Amino acid sequence: MSGLYFEEFEAGMEFNHSLTRTVTEMDNIMFCAQTHNPQPLHLDEEFCKNTMYGQRIVNSLFTLGLVIGVTVGDTTLGTTLGNLGMTDVRFKNPVFHGDTIRSVTKIQEKRESKSRPDSGIVTFEHFGFNQRNEEIAYCIRTGLMMKRPA
Image (cartoon, rainbow, N blue to C red):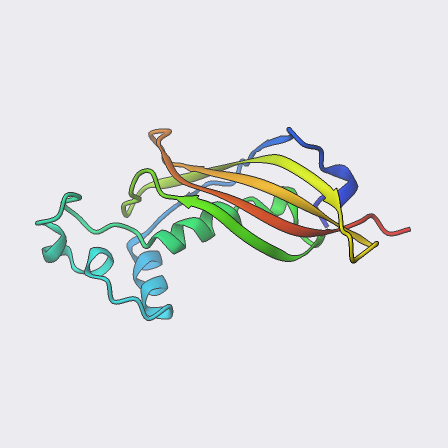
């Protein structure tokens, strides 16, 4: 597994994830369909011509999932026990079809689990940027992480 164990994380660590992803129209349409979200801002080009964006915007929950998802290989692949929460979510700039997204993760803190001696809690700070280096998403995520096996 390429994920890190609890002991390997340190507050202040920063990961500039090399995996990037260009968002397609199909990504946006399929995500909206799968989550039953009929918002015209995501689906109706004619409607969007008269909005402040002038075009469809990508579903923000897809964007957040992508920003966090591309971090998994470098941080938690096979070593996480699950997400405990996500806070301080923000979307500073919209994502459009054709934008290429990259992610940066910073480790805010870590602590031993009070109820599970085999695991610890890591707080991840995730940033998403587009190809113009504009911040498009931000989230603080708390994860329950495995400790290294004895």
